Length: 110
Ligand SMILES: [Zn+2]
Image 1 (cartoon, rainbow, N blue to C red):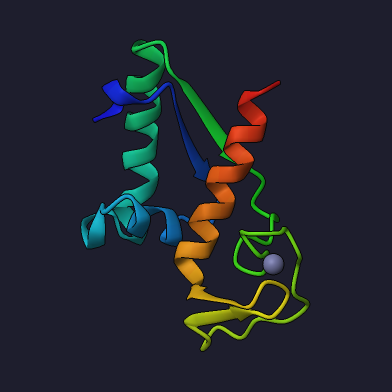
Image 2: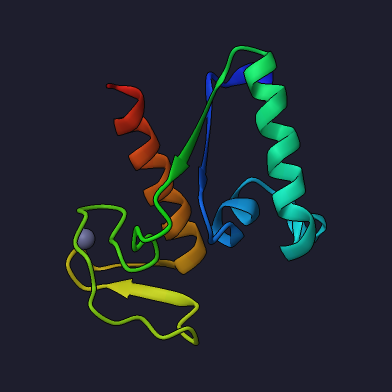
């Protein structure tokens, strides 16, 4: 699948949103994920692709993927999250994945 992309973007610590967005499912769970990423990274470099890591402190779940507004509080129990700034209601992991994607795009432009 990496043939189609020039870069793969991952968030350094919280991979949950991204792995769900990419449909890795449960097989890429907590323990196997780090190993999987390392292998993936080597493969991408071998193929001449870029591998981008997002700062682990980036508030990907708290940031509105539409306008960039950052919420102060987000409970872990809030799975679906409402961003009053834009009036959108979106799954928090999906929102986080969108933010990671947006940041990756910006990084690619430099
Ligand atoms: Zn917004």
